[in-house]
Each structure stands twice: as structure tokens, then as C-alpha cells.
Image (tube, rainbow, N blue to C red; front, side, top):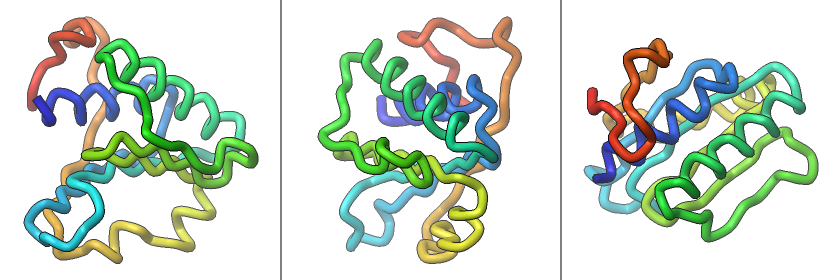
Length: 129
């Protein structure tokens, strides 16, 4: 089920033109505060906000609400915490500066690519990769 939620989150990001969507599986490390990160970036604060709004909406359709959010007031780096998954939506220059994936370089990573909508199933039955 978690793979399904990760894919829904990644698709929600990609639907709003997120760049460099990467999932980081933190479970093998055993010391992380969550199981997964899904990280992306965009070139404008407007786009960062649109991505966050779409993630919140698509996850809501799965019956999930963020436990907490951070960064919605400035849209430089938005964090959406779902407990087992944390979304990090960066303005590109902030992602380049913080290099979050490099901090967790020992964790398995997966790059998510956009798929044609005709190849997707509904949110409730998203295809697994």
C-alpha cells in the first residue's frame, strides 16, 4: 500500500510540472524519523505552491491528511508530513543548496518519471512500477 501512496504523491507532483521527483527509502537506515521522503523542485514559488496543493488534494482522495505542514507561507521549501511519508517541495535554488538526497545518500532512491494520463489508473488504483 505504501508503494501506491508514494506513486500517487509522485504523480501529483509531476502533474503540476515538478522537476527531479525522487523517492528516498529511509527504512534500511533505521534511524530516520520517517519511512520515505519524496522530493521535488520547481522554478517559481507559485509552482511550488501548486505542487503542494495538488499533493494535499490527491492524498486526501486516498483518505490521508498531512499530520503537519511547514513552509506554506513563503513557498521556498514546503514540507508535508504524512507520518510514514514526508514530501519536500523545494524552490530549485533551495534544493540545490540543501542537497537533501546527498544527506541520505546511503538510502535507496527511485526517480519518478511522468507517465501519460492515458496510462494511469484512478487515484485509488494507480499502477505500480
